[in-house]
Structure formats: C-alpha cells, structure tokens
Length: 148
Image (tube, rainbow, N blue to C red):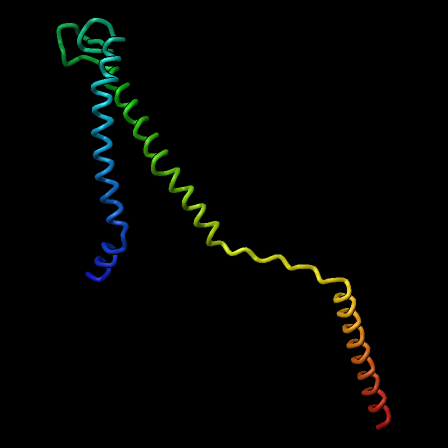
C-alpha cells in the first residue's frame, strides 16, 4: 500500500501539481491587485460620483442592500484575464510541444519504391516458369498414376 503511494508521489505529477498551485496562487494575487487597483477605479468612475462604484441600493438607508455590479464585473475581468494567461502561457505551448513529440515519435512506414522495369519483368518470368514447372509436375503425377 505504501509502495503505491510512494510511486504516486515520485512519479512527478504531484510535484508538477504543487508547482501549478504555487504559480496559480501568485498569479491570482497579481490579477487581484490589477483588478483592485486599476479596473475597480475605472468601474467606480463609470458608476458616478458616489464612492460605492457601479451599483445601487435596494433601500437607500440600508448599506447591506447594495447590489454591486462593479464587483461582478471585476470578477468577470479577473476570470477572463486568468483564463487567457493560463491558455496562452501554459495550455497552447504544451499542446504544441505534445504535437511535436507525437509527430517525432510516430513511425511512418517508408514508401516502397517501385521495382525497375527489368527487375519486374524478370520477376514475372520467374513466376511463369515456376507455374509451368508446377503444372508439368502435376501432369507427370497424373501420368504415373494412370500407368500404375
């Protein structure tokens, strides 16, 4: 049981997964800072002069009823940026590398070169002589059987 776990840990997938989690966490912090300090102020400016940003309150005197479209828009921008970076930095290059490796490892059957005309003619003559010899052999066998 422990041998299987040891093989799983040492196979490399766990290490790659740990690296991906660390890079993903760092990248999430970077995108979060970008959206909080660049995108949110732009959204708040588009929302008007109030400091709450793009949204409205259902009841004006209750701050808990604020519907914040800016936060949803910020989350959407964060998701799109994260997905685009993951795709263009990680997925697309890995797909290209995998296709190159697959092409390199695939064994293509070499095309058979056609026989030269004289070689093909000699092979045909050989096959005809073999067939004629076999036919003569069968005829002799029939003659010998009829004599007995």
